[in-house]
Length: 70
Image (cartoon, rainbow, N blue to C red):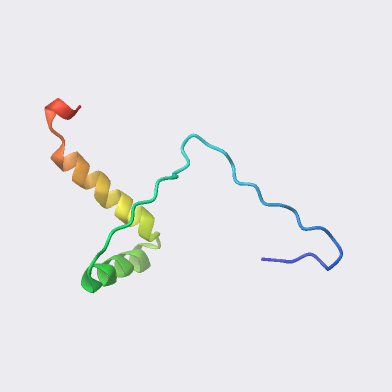
């Protein structure tokens, strides 16, 4: 990140407000082995931990959907 020379005001960075912004945080405990596996997946796929875990949750939900929940 480049910094402006001193004396110049810094521009405030504003995040785009979007209806698709993810704002919910889920905290969970995992084993060291699970953490190492997730870290390996993130390195190998160049994806974030959040993306990997989000995809795992989506796959679990898809495989456990029941007709009455739809």
